[in-house]
Image: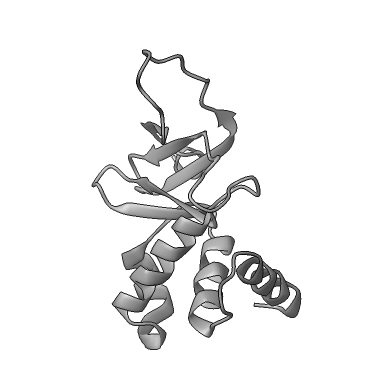
Length: 145
């Protein structure tokens, strides 16, 4: 992590009323540099013994509540996390984009430019979360074949 990235992460934490900790900075660094959503087990493997499982879980939960990251389930039902758009706020996510599950490499991608269309729902219902998951073969796997 270079000094510019570290400063950006620190500013993001301060903006959300969170203390700067090495563990939080590490998680932000890993999530920011991945081109796909990241599972907690993957984070545990990459970060290693620097952060225990409970601390990592709390960091992910806090980041999700603050609108820093959003969660999407993969085909196995495992939660994966990706950095939110800048329009997300505490307890109110604006990540209404398609998520793509690759059947080959099993990665989950945020397709930020593919928006979920607005929905008209029956009176009395209130949408709190929308998620559209598409599965197939990602461009990396497609190019490899």
